[in-house]
Length: 326
Image (cartoon, rainbow, N blue to C red; front, side, top):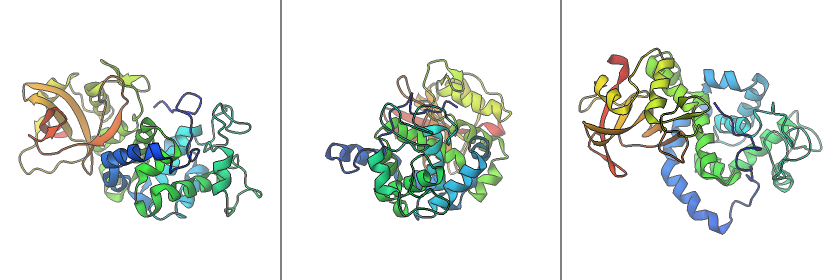
C-alpha cells in the first residue's frame, strides 16, 4: 500500500485550521452524510482488536500508545489514531522533514504532523510518559494531542468521525484514506473468525489498498487498480482465481438469492442489467463497499445498496455474488 506522507499528500492542516471555518461546514456535512454512522460501526470502536494488517504496519509500542490514547475519548476508535499516524509519518518511522525535527513545507511537526498553534491547544494535560513541557516530536504527547483534537471535532461519543478526520486535514481523499485504513486495522471478534475465510481475507486486503489511484486496466498494489482489477487481486490473495473483467466475474460467480444475507467479501455488481455489468465492488459490512470507482479517484470505501434492482447513481445494483461458493 502506498502511504501518503505529508511530503507527497495534501499537507496535514489538521487541527491545523480552525474546525469552525465557515466555508467548510457544508462539505463536512456532505462527507458525514456519505460515510456517517456506517463508518463508525464498521470500525468496531474501542472493542476491536488489531488485525494482521495493523500488526504488520504499526510498531508494537505505537500500537499500544494509540489504544491507550483513544480511551481518553469515548467513541474514538484507536484504529483512526493509528491510521492517521500511518498516513502522516509511517508511525514515526519516516525521515522526511518535520517528523523528528523542524517542520515540513506546511509547517507541520512531529509524528502526527501538528502545526505549533494547534498542538499547543491540545498538548495538556501531559499524559503518562510524555515530555514535560510537551513536545510535538514526542510520540506520546503527539498521539494524546491528536486524540484530544479528534475528540473536540466530532469523535466524542462517536458523534461524527468523518467530520473529526476532516477537521484534522481538510481533504476528502485524506478522510477516505484514513477511514479505509482504520477499517483494515481493527476487527471485532466475529471479524477475527471471518478473517480466516477467503471472503474475509479478500475484504481485508482490499481495504488495505484504500488510497491507491484508479488506473484503467490497473491491477498492481501501490500503483493502481480499476474496479475488477482490485477484485481479482484481492481474491487471488485469498486463493481464489477470478476472471479479469467485471462482466466475466459476474457470470462466473454464484448469485445470491432473494433474502440471502450479504456478507463481507461478497461482490456487488452494477450496470444496466445482467448482460451490461460495468462496475464491481467488495462488500465490507454495514452498507459499505470498497471499490476502485473511476478515473481521477482513489480506491475508497463508500455506501452501497445491497438489494438487487436498487439504484446506485445512474446504475442499478445488478446482483450480489459469493465467489467462495463458485
